[in-house]
Length: 252
View 1 (cartoon, rainbow, N blue to C red):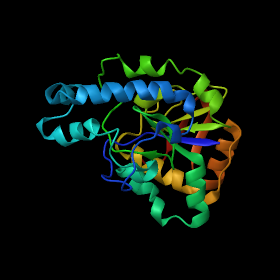
View 2 (cartoon, one colour; view 1 turned 120 degrees about the horizontal axis):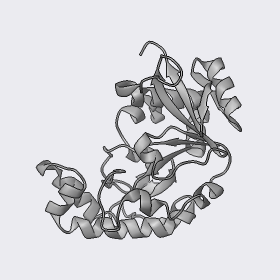
View 3 (cartoon, rainbow, N blue to C red; view 1 turned 135 degrees about the vertical axis):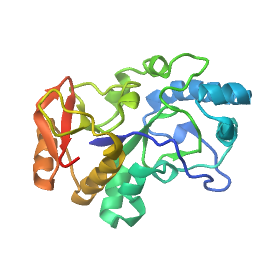
């Protein structure tokens, strides 16, 4: 089983002294060719600060982010789930989990990075800046990641609970027979429920925390639905279409 999260724009600086990115240490190596190509494009782009600010959709104060990309191959690394910050990761609050739940996260949770693809929580990564809609010389990121195709999901073991944002999901959709994408929505008629909106990230963080504390293990959509019933999360099986299922958040 794998629980797949979106990355965050904000990232902790620094890392383990004397370390740097080693693609060979990252999980799911079928992605390594794309990873190498994207890293080359990011470093190349960062050589022109004005162009990089535009491509990364940053304002004039974004120069430090460009510098991070310039140094991405030599800067120190740390585990991915310690690197990413923000609302979702604050709500998960990895450091406060009991040992068994912490181990569950490190074994079961992954993040889909626009730069590095699917990386496990423990994979050592540098600070960088690249979003799903960033512009690189090799073309749209969706078309660059499409090279990997379903061979990626053949390498990923077990059932995938996809909690990415829609933009990151489109870079590498999980096949419908390999897992389910949880669409966080407000209450409403089936087929016309509005997206959850502002609370999306915090709900995902608390959901993953609940999964970790319960030691969840899914092999099917029905397992997800049953776990939700037992733990206060309404995954609606009637909404299931093409690998997407509503997670209805009450009172939102």
